[in-house]
Length: 616
Image 1 (tube, rainbow, N blue to C red):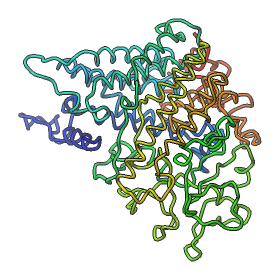
Image 2 (cartoon, rainbow, N blue to C red):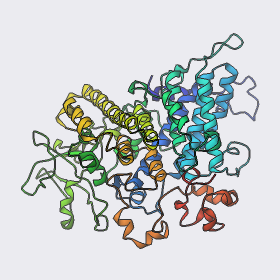
Image 3 (cartoon, rainbow, N blue to C red):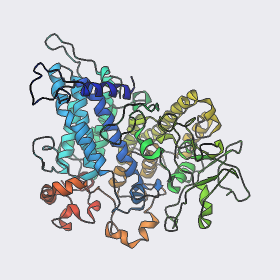
Image 4 (tube, rainbow, N blue to C red):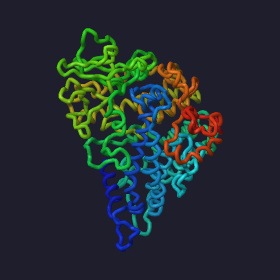
């Protein structure tokens, strides 16, 4: 059953009238549900919807720090330009987790344990760990042990406390998914399939997802001394043990398969949008003026200067219907029939942003061509938005976006990951391979690292090809656009054999850059950049944005030599819980240098979170 159908059922249960024999009890409103109304299997789809949306809404912002995408607005554009005074998704991250997911975890756990529904209890522990680890990645310190009590101003915990607590929760989740559910007092608990929209009730897939996330989190500790993960040390052996129990093929991936029906069931706590489509479509795909950068473009079209184009390039770089002219740049790629052209990448290492570019595309219906309504920026037509179409929410005739709905000649393809029906990736075999490659490379096992690295790339290519097949089966006419055609095996083989290099010339940079290419719009992009201190040898073709390097006022928030390392707390924490924020400052890495009001300092975003520091 699709996520939105399960969510509708769960919501209906929560909103149904409470059974009450004493209808004269004026202190109980029969039209208002209370926490005990929803059964444990009804809570899960609600929590899953919000947890997946929170993660990808946050990732739609953090990925811009990594130089792969650009948008000329304050929030994502600020992240891309390293204007750290610009807004973030802080409120989405904190409010949606605390109110929609975290507040249900203890209730779900207690209900499930009492009923012998251990797999549901495992979900509760997983969700608590997943959400709090995300908050620790973003903010460093948040209310954790005191988060859901009666205290209206909960105290803050250190990043280390949260990190180790999340790892303990994921360990318990592994234990719970490893045992069968049991009958209690003659009552057999609901099977996990009745509430689970992520893995269809498959406890083995949940186990693999738990092991992958544990490996991911423990791998964040590369700046810590070697030792046991239970002590907050870097534990390579435990990471590899987890990976041996994680995904072994794409069949083990945890994906959210979205629909685009414009369902009447809406997100009631967030944006009041239909619940069926991808969060990345909401944040990226349905919006304009979002571009691929030259850094990302170059890594796809000429990885490591090996002269072999990645077969995923046509799927990750947007296309636009167009016709050649005498002024068309020679380096632009066209479809074989000459009716589609591929975007170029916006070079953030130039002054294009300072010169008011890239300028928005316009479509001339009379001339049937594209133009930029700025004489100074006419050449910006080479840059194509990532914008996607939508048949349900957008009411389009297909999943192409048309700048002018009346003309097919104004169509844009969008890109693989941000369409309304693009699957949201929560855990993948590809990521497991890249983590393994990194760990083995650090241990000096070049052959083992290379095999894992190559397998990670292949796994991602196969995953993309499978989804392209789904879209083509739904609408065969999409095959006219190179963004949707399946990759040819000969091109895949050529890239794997000649585009990736060999074990002899393998570098950490190749591993980490291929991981970024395979996981766009993932918070792991920013986590990886921080773990390796934005090293230009580790992240190929990347450097600090020109706009930041040449705009002195931005140094107020990110001094020269510093980097984006955390988010400032949401405004309500600053306004209503500042006393507890100030109190935790003595234990925050680097906060002492910013003074007592460290949490409200202009340079708060440059402080490392716990795992990003060498603090014990």
